[in-house]
Length: 250
Image 1: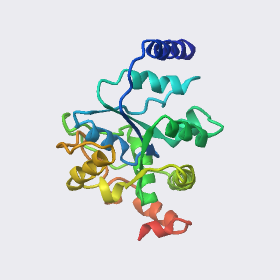
Image 2: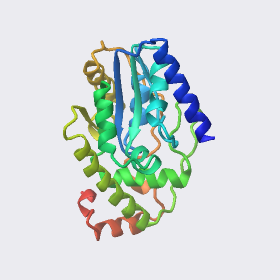
Image 3: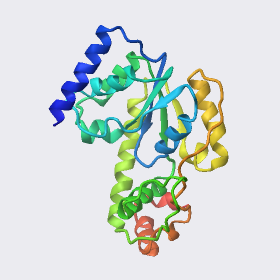
Image 4: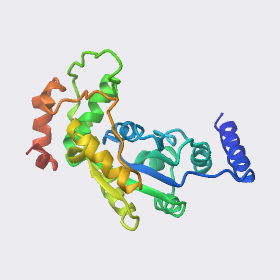
């Protein structure tokens, strides 16, 4: 099944090249780790009339990820194309021997980079672990609000996720060291709805676009007070306080 799709992607891109189809003048990707606010940012940017931003187009394995990407690029209906690229797409899904090589290839192809991260590794890890337990990653404002109940989480799972995020963060910094990018921090740029327009304007300006009104399509489902999300809150906090990540409790 993968091979058939790969052949279709190659055929589509080859046809586009032979027909001399134009590509969007501006291309970009949102880079980071899962649960960093990237889906929210995609929704905000898609409010702009000149932007078409895909989500995780590389979240499924492909033998030819570059063709998978450029199939989308060639069929973009607007002057600006974007997509989400998360660390695990390169490391866990496609098992790339050189993620740096892939990012440098994107750079040569003219892709600009919006790097999005979260400061608080604890909040970040809890968001992922709790969402996985609930089997709910996002909730659309257009849907009827569903009661979100606290869940029991294993302290070991939280600590392991924090450790993985720490490794990812160091890898992200290393990968982007020589690649120009716009850096955004979830807590400073996206956590509050009052930040959304100013943050979007920052990105629009980076992409050479005029400002347009934005509105989030997602409803926030993770409260800042972690005790509202975790049944065994005290147990988890005790484990964190006795770990190398105790600094994130302050």
